[in-house]
Length: 485
Image (spheres, rainbow, N blue to C red):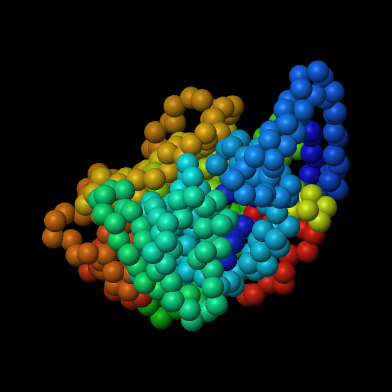
């Protein structure tokens, strides 16, 4: 079966839990020629196909007749569809009409729940990242945790969607999550209260004359919110010593991705010309590339991008573009390594298929699928070698990394000399990280040192001002045939 579809990416949310890092496009967008969804279905009537379809029907009859209790045709067929699509790779899935409706409702950026990004892995539910400022983040749930129980009842026999639905509930209601933390082997229980989660997509702060902008998710209107934060920082900097911004830190840590158009727009704000990203799939006519349009809102200010193992998909597109163009120094840890694009294909009123249809490539022509983006200056978040420890390459039956530029990366010659003196991790005396205290953020403090060196400034005492938040404007509910990631 062959689909030709338009492109626009959007994050799929379920009940306050965003399911997986990923790029998703909805069939039928008007982003490129031939945008109207055109299906070319070749019916394979070979004897082998007929035999296998007959086998499917036979097994279905046996289950209906002999299973321990009655089961409906609908449940059996939905189970078959789940397996057919879900076993292709970690990011493809079949959604029932109810699941598709939930995703469309909750993609607006305001939803009820706990604020967790989760991913199905070998029948288990694993945390990709808690969302800043949500019940899950405040409770201390960490990337890589496995959720094993909801309200003291096991979820091991549930699908990802069923587990997510268990975690749903009205705002103000109590919930208990039990997790296993692989790095320590400990089982922990967190008691939380569900709430309406307002996704705070942009946070900003001024550290001396360095502007700090944190992007938490590539949701609707992210680029305009980021632009507003940058303009605010410029105005604040006029009152600081020197009277102007001298550099920008772009924080993409634990940002699981979002809409492709927003990733392109953010990259375009810092790159004057050249390729930003390209996608290549099974059908050459759907391949596409996006180029910068000759603007740089910073007028060439030094930029440091912070990444970690939770920086995925759209975050990796931005980091890869800025790195390949030598427009920014990447500091932190290797990114998640999700280099695939999913197309969301509505199936009439019966739901939708979320199907991997392409790989994306950075401007140098590299696929980061399963590999991630390696920082120019490696700096760990904690004294552990890798606090995150969970990436695309750890998932079952991942998409292979093929095509693109296979040569070794050429070492950069524009890394500032201070990089040699930046420690790779905090020492034993470094205080425990506290999100409300920037002075405890080891990677941020090293980024400030690098930015100041690039700007020819001395390095002051650790920055202490907390970041201010910019919330997304609440967009209208998505309407087919628009596309979302």
